[in-house]
Image 1 (cartoon, protein in one colour):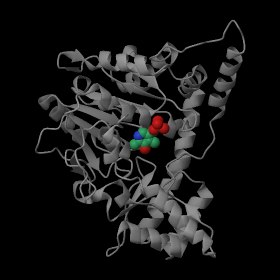
Image 2 (image 1 turned 135 degrees about the vertical axis):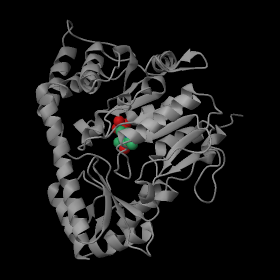
Image 3 (image 1 turned 90 degrees about the horizontal axis):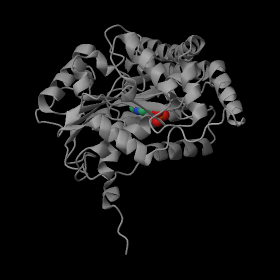
Image 4 (image 1 turned 90 degrees about the vertical axis):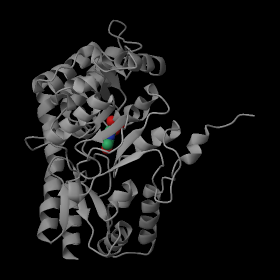
Length: 403
Ligand SMILES: *Cc1c(COP(=O)(O)O)cnc(C)c1O
């Protein structure tokens, strides 16, 4: 009789988005006088840009011709894409990343879930609170989390509170953590770590033999000086940090699927190169991102591609700045929205995140995401996203401000 991986039974139910959907449906059925506007979506809405579309079409045509047809892609990615990444995302920022340290994948979510496989089952993990749930759940599945408490926290995970008091920047823990997940600019808080703050974590990791998993999916949204675009801007990061990147939020590839992980050859643990371990894992379990999608990724780095991607990011950031400035003017306390497409709103005192969700839905027909759904420290906050149209975003914000 087969037994299941019982770690899966330790997963907390993912009620957040199903509860939101249920509440929205009930509201719709009550025959409201207002249309519903969703400012909760974490998915882009603008179409792929012309340069990307052309690269896709051209690559499709190559696949139709015997002379240019391509079969299996190299497991770790095509050289043309790895080269473009090294030059544009790293060398241009004076960071050293070699081509054989870049592993092309189908996105940062799969990478952030899979990366834990190369570490021992007893490693102690640390995550920010609030947190992108994939980091936690993938470690629950692997048996590293311990038991789930009534407070929604796992006994063996170290939670790093990110609150207004610490500027939403995780502070070093008292105990030693082996694997530390950092996401900056952050989903859900929308805040980004400064270079000094990130450098402290790199120093901590090198002092303790820890490894940092740095999720930089929102790198393209950074608008301020002093915010690192890559963890490799910090000295010593090549000895302790893995960086994850995605083409989803900058270039709109959420449906196309493309990302990459950087695993420097300088990270040695237990006398073993993590670069070699990840190469082994990747080539065993993954058969490469599609050729046409890697060509589309290459096009993102062309001069026209870069301009178009800037246009996409600017489009969403216009929404973010509208949300931010108008909510502020109306007396709300808001964070994020400057180096990321997320605005993190402090809910009015006396209300929980869910109270505020119900209040916004019923009174304004606006849907957001309750902060408590991302962790205990998210209680009292509410996430609004900038991925909608200008028209819907303005209408939603105007309705909130009129309450
Ligand atoms: C959207 C997002 C990603 C990107 O995931 P993909 O699989 O590349 O689409 C990664 N990390 C965080 C925190 C995100 O919000």
